[in-house]
Length: 287
Image (tube, one colour):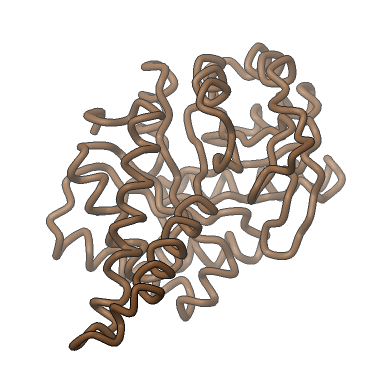
């Protein structure tokens, strides 16, 4: 059964580890992530961007697939199904469809409007026992066509949004989505520290987990980051394994063209990436 991310993140914050949010794109992604979480006894958050939701035929399809898998695969670890970078409309659609958690990204609105919309969604989520993530200061890189430069959030604005009763807060600390450029300046731990000072027990979220050096990840966790989002890294490892399979001509041997065979190396590569991340984040055995 899907659960809200609240309890798993409260535990993570207190225990100084982080829970990974791994974005899903299809059946292979979902199955690989869930099996790895179960094997490592780690709580997990399945992230769905609006683009991926559309690709998978809509939020109801996603909810049906995930609930079916939890049941059929006998998953016992806590699993949250979370809308990633949701618009106001997207958030409402996911609440309706049966997600257990949403992110409302109001970072591009003036702060007053971000506050008003977040407040309304917090009330609905509280009523339904769902968790809600808010964002302050846009995360750089590209997320479904929206490009940002990796700015740092204003800690006072973070406190304003945190005080609305959100479950978790994503604050821009110089992080970006996708691959990091050569000239990236690194994470701003000063910003993170200032945000943590003002938001207290609130679990903080680090977006753009792909390509941040391990020591920075560990330092971020020590400063209150309890949820780390990973997407690009799974995509890269899936693509790499699939390319190798085809370049080796395996799709031309016997029934190697069967999608179940063709996609198997990529699915295994996702598992390996998720395992690596869960070990780094410290969530193994915490279910």
